[in-house]
Length: 111
Image (cartoon, rainbow, N blue to C red; front, side, top):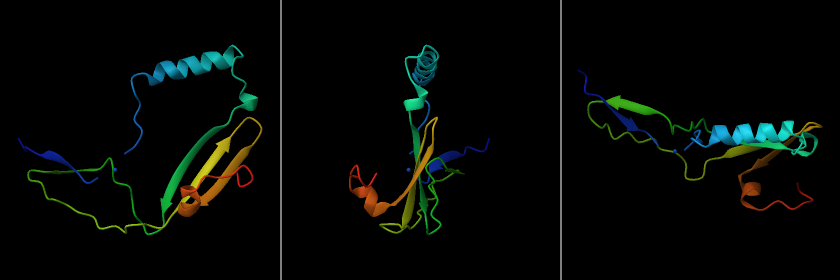
């Protein structure tokens, strides 16, 4: 037996929760019943791209018999660009923004 253990290198992603399938079924049933109008609904998502080649390693594990105490040096405030996209039945609305803009609330005019 190898007796290896997983060691985390480090960060967090959204995992499906036990309640998620029921929520999805409810949403689809509401759409079919006409209670939710897809013509008026936007679906959105966002992603961050690090410009120095940094990779988010949250779900990575290093398997070893002993903890290697790995560290990965990164900038305190890495340069990154965020991308947000909204999708509806009528159009796709991409909005690009950077870290400074993301730290401030957007006004209706800026949005």
